Image (cartoon, rainbow, N blue to C red; front, side, top):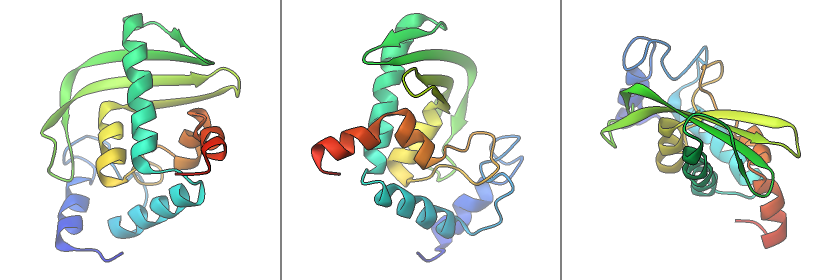
Length: 161
């Protein structure tokens, strides 16, 4: 993938102190195009799609809202807590307007694994295939996400994405 002017502009917006204090890149020194390509390849190797990951995150977020900041059980074996935080976050790609600062914790009880994401993570994964840079505080490792969300099991049952 080529680092286009659009991606270069987005990468500049992702740097520390631009849109957020910590930024979106962590200590990752790769070009945004290379970060996107590496995560896309990892997702493809697992036989799922970015939209599938984001859709499952959004489904669990919606189920978790019923807990009003406390963990709720979501069948078959998830616990989800949704914490609404004051403020809004902008998409560093310059799209989607402002998204609420929401922290979503998803626990896969069966696998004893946990994932914390935000509404912005869901948007970035669905629309841009972006999981944030290595070392970023809100980096979502695609392989961990697929396992926590049980998408590796669903992919095997349905024959892949």
